[in-house]
Image (tube, rainbow, N blue to C red):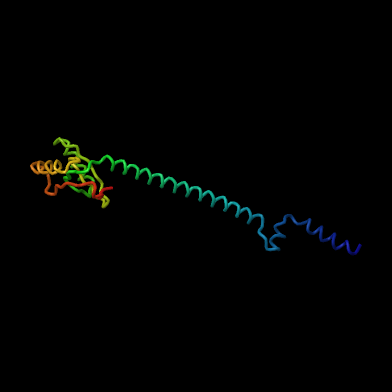
Length: 158
């Protein structure tokens, strides 16, 4: 009986404790609250990872769409362009784009890699035709002194 009595008291003391957190804390193990916080943090981290991956996928799709658009524009360009101006300011380029149809030209805006927009008043695949048109344009009042023929094989655009 003397051997069973301390064992019985020990069992009663352990049973009287409300939770295992006290035992876990004494043994250096995480408590149920710490485990709950860790589980919530894991869920939060995985949700943030999913959001980051979705954003990266969206940006990659935008980049691919942009590149496809540029390639489509490149393929529609004729080789030689009679350029009437190179503009860094969009409003100046827009003004030139509005003037050219009044004179019977169909302007095309070409974006260069350096950020400039050039306005092409005439497009052709024939170099002599491009130079003849350039010389005719010198007689126009809107023609600046920096008219030139741009060859798209130079790959300065896009």
